[in-house]
Image (cartoon, rainbow over all chains, first blue to last red):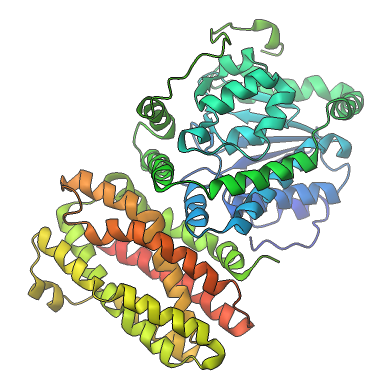
Length: 323
Length: 215
């Protein structure tokens, strides 16, 4: 949060900032900026991490034409992102601080709003998830032009398990990518999905074999690069044809903040249980948040009525056009 | 510009996370502690809790009527916290440490530094610095108290609140305290007072982290 706010000049200025939660890489030949998140030991959207990512986005906006591709991935093994900072949520809910909850949600929306409009800056965006992608972690990848998951990645919106819902773009972006039925299924069940299940639902564009995600990213970039200008024009048109309204995102954040204040002690204890599972995994345990969510699903006896969506692993080879 | 409570959270979030993500804290919350380490921790905690109300009294005595609302808040808070060091003594007894031993324990340098700073800051920085101590210690207890108590129970096979009564009860008690503290902090104005609170939060998180890491 202490980053200088003066505009960076060129790539040297952008890379020269003192990042703590990001590792940036620049490929000058294809003008690719890669950002690898490293919020240790628990990979989540902390205030500092969001501040640094927003700073990168601001620098890209202030240097038009600098980057042609932006890739977001994780430096933390087997975790893309656990989403919101659960301890901060517990703190804000216990303090009844709706203003700060709204502020946090607003900062999340600022980030996805930039990604949503990256094509207007001529920037093609790719997200690569190589591990657990939960809640806000999943929300954060949905506005990217291409979403690549490695095969063993598991993802979902577990918030309903502690009586909340994902409030930073999950509904709007899941509906646009996959339709209302899938959005309802995912958000209302709280269950986790495999990469192949998400590919089948069209929430993910490409599933790469484990360890092959980086290669697939290279392939995507080389595929887009020769027709970059046309692709950007088409993607801007795509956004115009299926617009996401900022008013909708902001209104949902307000609603989310109000709902957060209705969480009971039991709900907060479930959130703490999940946070503790994240800590356990960070401390070297085999099982972490994903396993805890599965236990919570059973414990709360959600009953998970099937929505009729087929969960089978289809392979969906038609979508793995680049593998 | 958010209200001061929001500014405080933002300004000190990395200090909170530095506590939360310190390997010793991660390990304690994930795996609990050995009985020896937990005894040492409670011995240090006893000397932190013992000084809690005297520090508040020191600050209250230096707050003029322009800060009457903060002073009244401190009076109420002291009333609620009175005698809680006895809870730590009870927990120590439950894990095999007698009262005499606890009271004779020489606090670690970090505990001395924490208490020393908390007496010094209201006198030399600003009396409102005490709110920084309250904020950080209540964040630690209300956000991390319950998971830590659960981990201790599991690792030491303790039943109910026996041996963890202070930590477990403050995990829920301080819920209301956090909301009250926000109401006191939000209207607080003055650069000197705000800077002293932010500094106190940073120092308290830092020293408490090391108290836990040293045991």
